[in-house]
Length: 380
Image (tube, rainbow, N blue to C red; front, side):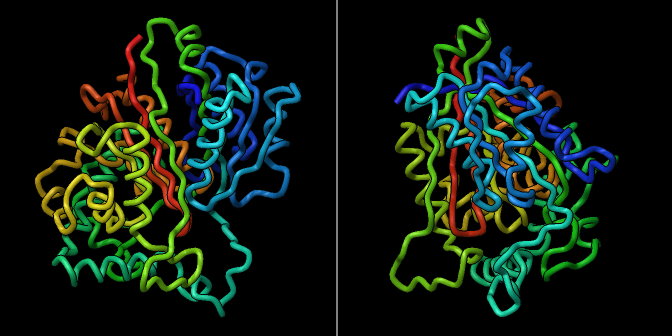
């Protein structure tokens, strides 16, 4: 396997994007990534288009906006992890020697999401994700004594991180407080509207190439290397009850992360920042523990110490996460790559994590798949 680097990233703002077509958002994000990479579409050997809620062949049609080069275009779909999996496919194409340069693209509009096969007679049709995660939250409150104030404070943190991100969907004009979060409309007890992921439209793109080629294209610029990229689906364990694709075991995050640590030769103690699937604050809190940042039941204290805020020991969701930056679906995992790449280059502006050299990106897809990618900075 060859060493692979992220050489270019681009992103359109997440949100309603009224008056701007999805095709245009994809085009803009792709052109930005190419400019960032110092390359053109003619340099791209393969394209992986990640989307959930667009018509068949949308990826091929959108890719034609950049040129007609004959490069293969592949549609990738894995629920919320779609963008992360598209990135992994592009990484594998370069690492395996199939191409020198590959592009991962994510786009979607989740404003009118319709999921086929989810009838009201299935578990997923009767209980929406907000309901499932509300049960997670209540269970944690029972087992570990987590309070509503902690959930609200995690959400407020991510709103305030998002305010520093020019591409975030939710950019408050004031410092958001836990009290404000708690007073917002109740969605699924204990989650209020300000604790729930923001859904809208958007696009994000990453261009990957060999480390050698990255150094040639961008002499003197830090190389952002893919240290590990791991994808797993859920595994059977004694007592496991399979309820459908949305209800997966949280242990899947632990095993996927462990494999990524082994593949990279790194551990949780080496991470400088983390992006996670934090559609609701209970997820972020739980992932502190499942990713090995702290022990089981210790996440509440880790947060209370300020460790996961900007300026803390290991900031989570530095761009606002799914709650603040937004969660259009297809591009969400690639938005994490965009953010982590900027952070490791030292180009994240007011939300910069000082001295960041290693970042982990984590997404789950409807509870049944998990993708973990670790990026690392290597100075030329």
